[in-house]
Length: 163
Image (cartoon, rainbow, N blue to C red; front, top):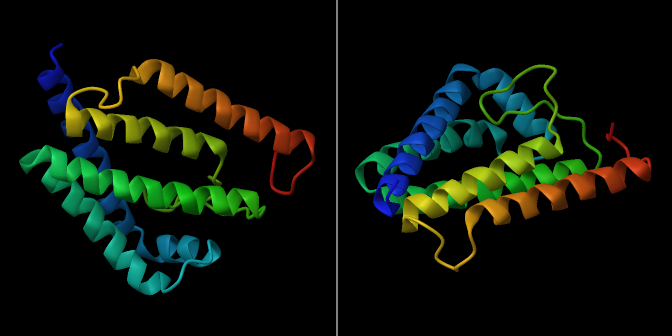
């Protein structure tokens, strides 16, 4: 697959993911608001409208102007990941609102790994490859190892909220 083909494929996959996430949050507004509140986010009633609108905007831009949409998606992913890591570090046991709130599906390090993978896809959609000369597969493997190692250390120390 050419770099352009890879960039196009990444953009379309990301568009589908962000469209799904935005629609799911709108459909499950009440549960998503509860998840946002449990995460301690400011103005969850506003965020439950703004976040899905921005996700849907990213989806549309990924189809129309892929690099711009990918940049917006990457911005969202960084913000989401910061919130996830903060929640896990503080020991919060919160249902995941990533693709609409899913009762009984708590935030885990897997969600962080997923976001890292999506961020790598954003890189492909923006640049058609690696702009920093690091191949994406080794980068993804390294990220997974770091996250699993971090989660294992926390579990070994008996941190609250870790299995």
